[in-house]
Length: 417
Image 1 (spheres, rainbow, N blue to C red):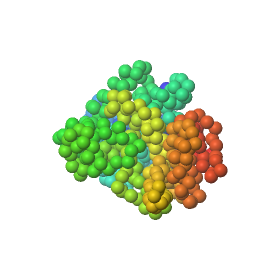
Image 2 (image 1 turned 30 degrees about the vertical axis):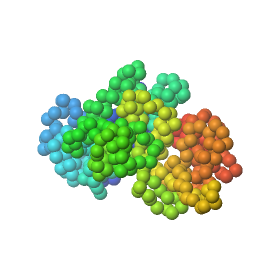
Image 3 (image 1 turned 120 degrees about the vertical axis):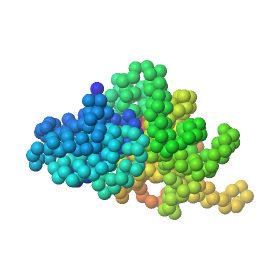
Image 4 (image 1 turned 180 degrees about the vertical axis):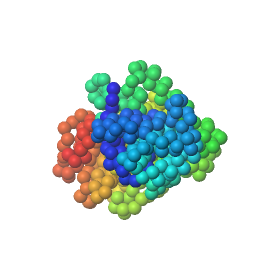
């Protein structure tokens, strides 16, 4: 089974010979090695690149143990470069080389070398690696499988695929596991033995229990506006634990650095400014989120919102949480202010979309609730409501487009209906 990941492959192709190190980042087990050593390697061969000009080293392979020495691997690579033609250097799990930053910087001085790397430990997963090579690195950030990618490897109809996807997420290995128990055990073990260990070791966290509690609270809070102070109060009231909001803020940044969660900031649409008081956090993989809660809280509406967010990020959009202010008279005739939320303000260059993830609109009252914030926006950018129902795309008298989740996820041009 081969899952095409053309979006990322095309980014690697576009970066050929740009003089920068192509750095493939992403959450552990999302398919970085497969992208580099399988898909990109095959592409190079298809372009008639001679195998002798593709220097590929999987550093987690025991047979390459000696090449984990920085001086040995540099000598080995330079020995392979025997002419002036271009050589492609593909290094997988490069963090296994001590002082790998110096090794990569040395390779930048080889004029006929084009360098591509992946890494998987906490040091490499963090945003530090991109900072280290700022101006010399070209980051390709890999997400778990999108729903459309998941469907290409799934044996069954798309409705059953959806149930699997919103339950077990998009980490590629899920597709080859046959039973629910194997999938659940895989996700549980992956979080405990890989993701959590990475975060604890990298940041020298001593209190594992507090971090565990925080991650579980975050998993329960997808789609809810929160901030460190609010989370600190939750610890105190629900868990009876005193933890300072600054400590929580640090923990959240650690989870972001490890690509486990992403933060979306509130944006005042009319005021055209960011509001840092509350933000929303989404999990890079909903399967990990569900595993953290022992697969108990399977609220399809909140999970769908997380999946919509991830799909927008996979497509390369910047995604904020929108807010518009409404002024109306209360029962006593007093003018009161009310904040209405737009789930996602989606930007890419000069393009913008306002998107609501509504799950279901069973009646007129729910429709008014979902459209209220959109109707308060006076600009001409497209306004979209995404529902779970598999309906034909339709547009109302106000120009608001309603589409089903399947159309949104499976059509890469779905926002342009």
